[in-house]
Image 1: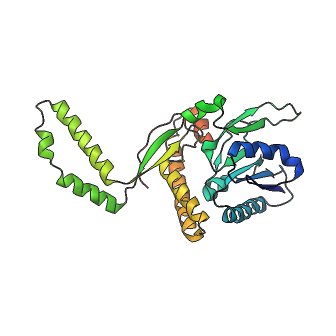
Image 2: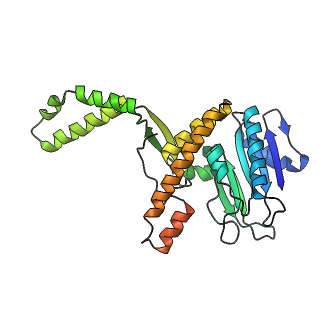
Image 3: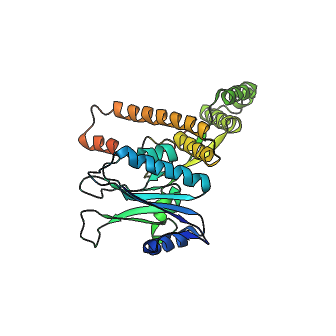
Length: 291
């Protein structure tokens, strides 16, 4: 098991000399924000149980996030066959690598906590290896602005019972007679009706905004992203019991989303099946979903 953690700050660097070049690049990129990076290597045939590696990463992240709650997290390495979903479920990290890095699989991965800060790509390595080189670059770089433009902002409506009750009351109290008598043109009246409903929804239901990008898995809905942010905030405050409760809810929502997607694939083509297995969205869509 090989696991190296490096903590970066504007005036302090807890590093080893051999990693100096990588560190200074990250420091320049992050403009002084605290950054915690990890280099992991999980061999194809480890002498230890896979759970030991997962527990080591989990324990280290828990300790580091307690000490540095606002830090930017980067976990990268060759994970081979290690199940890495826990980094997304338990810590809200997002996997940036989307193309094959070795053979027919993605085993070289980079997980980050602030996906908007980075763009990721793979290139052929100049070193003799079967692996492709994975690059994590600054998203503000001029050559990568197009990636940021592909991300869409999505409103997530809070549909808890008391908010729905407020919306029902607003609809009941609204002066619909004015809308129905505003014109003899049915199409115009219908458009006024829709505008009134939208206005009532916006004024009655609280909303949160999340960003959906082309790298986001299809099962990672806007509602789940809101819950991930809430859970991470609770973890930083040390409210682990509440955070664990939300994590259980997130796992259930992900399972239902994946089950729903796979239930419709019995008559799909091979290409469509691989797209679903890969878990990537073909197109971005604006969704309005509940918490």
